[in-house]
Image (cartoon, rainbow, N blue to C red; front, side, top):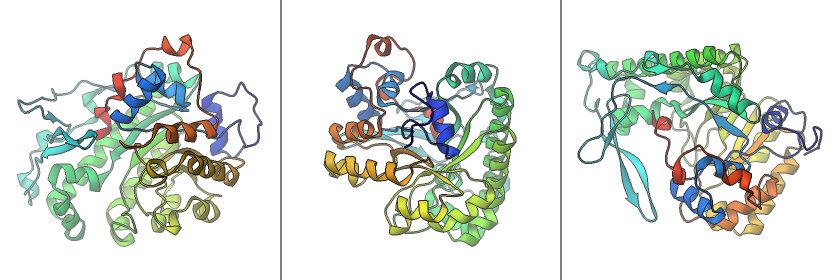
Length: 384
């Protein structure tokens, strides 16, 4: 990238310049790894918390969020724990690690709206927004300030955790009344949560982050007709909300979502996250050529193929390709999902070193930092 802003460019300036195509000192970076991967990286560098890791990898983003103060979220004798909607989760092991999975679905089998237990519908009143502006002030001096997560909105995936994914796929076709009420309640919750967070931040949020898994490995999960009928108005409203408070909008989606991109742009999307390159239509060069004058991108370094199975030279080549494709900005470099267990550390380090973000010599200033989850633990807020 062209070096326009000098070595004193803050991470926040770097991200905003990238999104405005003004050039910056290096390509912006956004990291995500599983807890096991983050713990391995911390051990490699002798770190003790997530903030130290983000500094070393050069992550240019920090998230702020209101404090939950609603009804107690219970933990049960089987070590499962409760979500905002009455669903329960537990850590399920797999080779090398564990994932959080739903183990109790409160709305499974509910086909009539009158049978819904609405006591499990959260509201924006369950949160304290009093420290939002202070959080923004603390991180916004240096980093791009984000609110939300890939799990916000996220109707198909997350209602599946309350109801079962097979039932939700059927609901999308039949517009079952119980599903439609949950859908509306979920939108109302997140719209209210983000509106109050943005208001409390007083214009200091840079990016509003939401999600919806619209793609499979090879094509859309749903038709454009279903998207337009059930989701378009809601995403248009949340994007407009972010813009009213001066924030850019970022939407996560796994899979091949290229058919939805023109409509998402019309609705007000600024950044497509995570750009999973499983088909030619999702190749970053194609997306840049087709939509790059109207849309920025985040991610694109594949956690299924390149990062776990490539060599460092392969990773270096792909990072350089992206830097060359986006000389003035328009791409935030990062993985296409949480970097998975089994990914060689040398590949991860090659990605961030080539991007120019990696701090190779960890000083006492970094080791003295507090904050973040020990061992990169999963942030439960992302689930809900």
